[in-house]
Each structure stands twice: as structure tokens, then as C-alpha cells.
Image 1 (tube, rainbow, N blue to C red):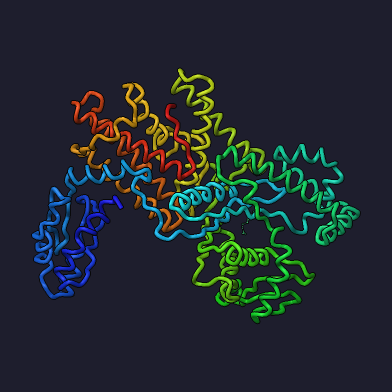
Image 2 (cartoon, helix red, strand yellow):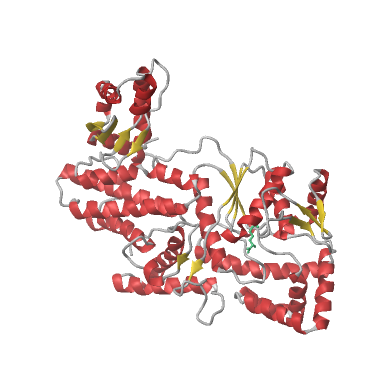
Length: 576
Ligand code: ARG
């Protein structure tokens, strides 16, 4: 790995072993605020060996190994070693990432099968901003795991089954399929749902029909199944339109809705009963996983089968665990679902463990996220108070970005402007979501997300476009500078070099906690480091050797920026 911290750890291991009678001892190298890195391992080793830590630190320095990477070494406090990397060391580290299509990021040592459950809107219901969050966060996690070489299975667990489908199908029949299709494919899902619901509460005749329809659906009646399919298709066509606007990787092949698990749920209940976990509670079949209690402190049941015989959301999620582990061979399962479903998922995981479906071999992780708030700090709603339609939101983002681009760069052709506006608008919406710690709520704020300064997509995209324009204006082919050695002498170059070399650890930290905001912070810091480099260090006007070094540094920055943005699902235009 080209990450300097791991490179020097490897170099220091033999030194530490020698000072420990040949036994391995961790040099404990960490990034440092005061220098480039800190070697902390002398302290614990000195303690273990009963020697003076500063003397042991001195022995590490005297070994001469540090000369291979440090230009400045200082023993501080009780025995920390602060090191500043030498320019030569940085030059060679940068050469290795510049040559590497992976930009220094190693493939995962073990490729895992990773199932990612994300997006998961509900048929004939509006996709709300919560689904936007799940979609955008899930997409970024998918891209990163794919990049590391894992086998990633995307699963869109849409809500496409249940009692409401009786009334929805009857309403579809009443409206006529084609009229319904017009509304639904254009995204009027709420209108459809509300109208069906209103009829259900007003008309007894409709209620009877709806109930009979559910029974027909459950019993596999052919005509009912056909109508159900149409309803699902109309909704998924709308979801697809949103996905393609957003530029996420989900396709129809990734649909594994609740309906998929219906025929398998009887067996799930049997298996729970065979495992001796099923109990009767008020006529329902339930499991009591230990550690979950209700407000009164009584054990909380996970309801598996209602008194009426119907299965529950929990039953389909349990069946889904079985499917992911036993059929798909998951090593890691990510559930990108809002924080309110925390308890539901923890109970599902617990019961799956108790039943032996979830073992140490598979890790199940809930990746929760907070709410999107409007400027009133309440859940984001449109002016009329209805839930916001996602397509409208995305279109508005692109519109607003278009106006900003027209102002900034009036020379762009209409066609280029539209394309750039699309990348900025969509990028801004995604980035404002990804760049805040996902467990927190965030405020949806057009002006902030579309600003060209600050931690925003347009700022990052602009930094990238600016580098491209340095080359364009000087008429230099970017690939042609890639063999020039990068010699980061100025402090701003030094800082930028270090940042570039930290790309692998930024991705690593992001995936350790499934937190895309860590990669966002990294790309933002990278762009800021570039900005201060560019302000202080002339590129085109520098002497020949410095110029080729700085051009290579700029090109590498643009590549890492674009790559990091791509892992977040954000495009980087070459001009804007
Ligand atoms: N359809 C659900 C909702 O809109 C989310 C489903 C998430 N996935 C799951 N396996 N439960 O809230």
C-alpha cells in the first residue's frame, strides 16, 4: 500500500523487533498534527522492557532507518518520535500511486459477497426523501464495495404486497387500467393511494370488494395477479425514472420485493416452530427475543403470524435473511434503512441468530440514517404541505444549477450547459445528503447545496474543472505529464502530496463505519489543499522542472478527486 503510514510501519517493524529480542513489537505509527507522522511504539515497548523510553526512541532513530523517509526527526515528550517526510520519499510514494489505476487503493484481501438492501420504496405510494437518502447512501456503499473487489448484490426490497393491495387493485379496475397508468407512471402515486383509501373508508361495497380481492391475490387468481403486476410495473417505471435521473446503479433486475418472500414464509414459520422459538400470544404466533422490552418493561414479541393467519413485515424480513444467507451466500448484509426501523431490524437479526440462520459467518448491519428537514426544521414537505415529489425535487435542482452555470460561464453552448447543469444539480442533492454524518438529520437548503464555496458538490466539481482547464488553456495533454516526477517542495505541495497519499485510508475509514461522509470530507479537504497550492504555487509560469512537477501534481489531484466523487456517485465535469 502506498499509504506512507503503512509504508513506514513496515520499514520500522524489523527495528522494533530487534529492540525486543527478536519478538515483533508494533511501531504504532499515526498521522500527527505537529508533524507528518508520529511513531508512538517506543513508549509501550520501553515500559515492557523496563528501560527509559526516550533512550529507546533514540535507539530507533539511531538505527538509521528513518533516514529513508524522514527529513526531520524529533523525539518529543516522554518518547514519541515526530517525523516529517522527506521530499524524496513523497516523490517515490506519489510515483507509485500515479502509475496505479487504483490510485493506491488495494483490493480487498478477501472478496466477500455483500448484499446491500437499499432504496425500497412502496408500490403505489410516493417515494419520500427517506427513500432518497437510502438510495443515495446505498448507491455510494455499493460503488465502494465493488471497487474493493467484493461481489455486490443490490437488492431493492420494495413494498409490493399486503392488505392494501386489495383496495389498490379494485381502484385500478374502477379507474380503468389506462387512466390509472397515466397518473401512476407520471408519479401521482399518492393521489392514487389516497383515492383508494378514501373509497375504502366511505363505501362498504368497496370494502367488501377489496377484501375479496386480497383473498384472490393470495390464492393466485390469474386475472388478479395480472392486475397486481400492472400496478407494480407502473410504480417501478416511476421509480426507474427517479433512479435514472439520480444516476444510481439500481435496475429492475435488483427488485426483490416483499412479494418474492410470500411463498417462502410458511416454511420460515415451520422452521421457527421446529427450533422451539414460536409462542402463542393473544392468538398470534410470536417470538420473544431476549433483551427487548416495551415501555412497561414487559418482553416485546416479534409478531410472525397474526391471529387471522396473515404474515407480517417481520416474517418477510426473516425469510429475507434466510434467502440472503442460504441462497445468495451473503458474508455481509447491509440494510440501508431509516433510524426508526432500528428496533425492528435488531429483533429480526436476534431471532435469526436464535434460529441459527445468522451465524458468525455472516455479518448483518443496519446502516441507519436521520431525517431530511425543511427550513422550518420539520420533515421536508412541499409548500402545499404534501410530501415532496422526488422527480420535482431533482428537476428543480437541475434548473437552479442551470441558472448558476449560465451566470458563471455564459460562453458554454446550450447543450454543454444542460449537461453540466444536470451533473451539478444532481451532484448537489446527492452530496448534501452524503456529506453529513448519516445518523444526523440535515436541512435541505437549496442555496447552501448549490453554493460554489464550502463543502458542496459544485465546489468540488469546480476544483476538478479548474484543473482540467489549466491543461486545456495551456494546450497540454494530461496523460503526457504523468511520467514527470512530482517533487513537493513548497509547504502547500507537501500538504497536498500527503492528502493524495491518504486516499486509501479515507476509503478504509469510510467502509469501516459505512459512513460516506468520511470520504466526502476527504475529497473536500483534497480540493481545499489544491486551492491553497494553486494560490501559492505558480504552475504554468514556473521553471521547466517545477512546472512539470506541478502539472503532474495537478493531474493526479484531478484524478483522485474525480475518482472519489465517482465512488460517491457524483460526476465531475471537465468544464463548468
Ligand atoms: N419499504 C420499506 C419502507 O418504505 C423499507 C424496506 C426496507 N427493507 C427491508 N428489508 N425491510 O419503509
